[in-house]
Amino acid sequence: KSGSLVIWLTFGAFVMGFSSIMTGFNFIVTIHRMRAPGLTWNKLPLMIWALYATAIIQVLATPVVGMTLVMLIMERLLDIGIFNPAKGGDAILFESFFWFYSHPVVYIMILPGFGIIGEVIPVFARRPIFGYKAIAYSSLAIALVSFIVWGHHMFVSGMSDWSRWIFSFLTFFVAVPTAIKIFNWIATLWKGSIHFDVPMLYALSFVFMFSIAGLTGVHLAVLATDVFLHDTYFVVAHFHYTMQGGTVVALMCGLHYWFPKITGRMFNPRIATLGWLLLFIGFNLTFLPQFMLGMEGMPRRYFDYLPQFHTWHAISTVGSWINGGSYMLILGHLLYSAFRGEKAGANPWNALSLEWQTPSPPPQTNFAVVPQFPNSIYDYGTEGAPEPHEERRAG
Picture 1 (cartoon, rainbow, N blue to C red):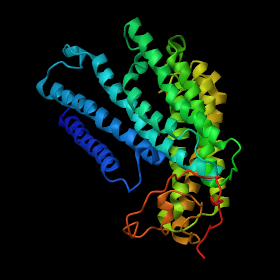
Picture 2: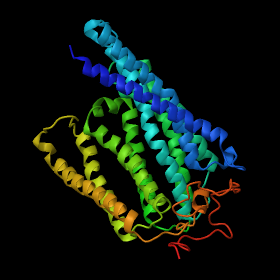
Picture 3: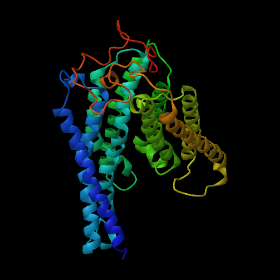
Picture 4: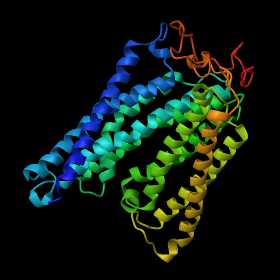
């Protein structure tokens, strides 16, 4: 017997799922019922569209893993066969339930990052966002399609040929709304007056590294190549380009962008730029070689490896040191700046969205009166729109 500890841990994970569901409902109801006057659906900030899509996934996907955990508890408590083949259960059923939840979870993590990038790029490109509706609706498309692609994790687990073909096609299909975002971000940059401030450096890095994540995902959607690349270091590299090169870099972008608003102080741009550069170099030095290792046949989850893999491993190891050191520098510098940095003005980036129209940090009530939402918060580059750095610090 495995003991009751596993059952209690599983039950704890089940209870935690309610927080995700309730948070999703909270976001959905807030967006529907508590918008500012003049804030119609076609004026919503792209960050809010991304959070709305994220909330939909939270509400619809989390109950599945909750039911799976309940069945896992029942299997152990009642000694019945649901997933355990030794008791007449089906392990593939557990894998299907797991991935039906766990693949949408990837989009729960990346969609807010998409929203951050959609807010930052027009500010520092000083151009209106290109294809606002396409970016907004593509977030919803990603949320919906995320539920019908879980099978690509199971191409070699055991499924019919028809199932493999269908999931392969659907996996290609989910790339379409993501590519729409990448295209529109690049189109926003086209002929823009680009300012390479630290948030913009992170945003551009995100576009570059997430494009690599998407392009390498194509190899895992193709049945003929996935058979050879499954459970190799190629998958490790692809996953980290999605999660760290995508989600974490986007969060760093948002953290530096809203840092003056949150703390009321500015970070040192030179140190912050050095932190970004070390992260960019260290991350790519860590995970690009792992694509090579995967294509050469090295499996994941092994602590040892054959001699022919040594060179790429050595390069990846050095990159991991740089990558880890960059986070220590970035977070240490931001922590110092939060208390000792120069005081920031209300709107150091001259952004047009409502949060930048309050003091930094904002007062407890955010706004003295209910604000009237402007016609557009993306009218950069138009007559009268301010340039960055006209107000960098408090006077």
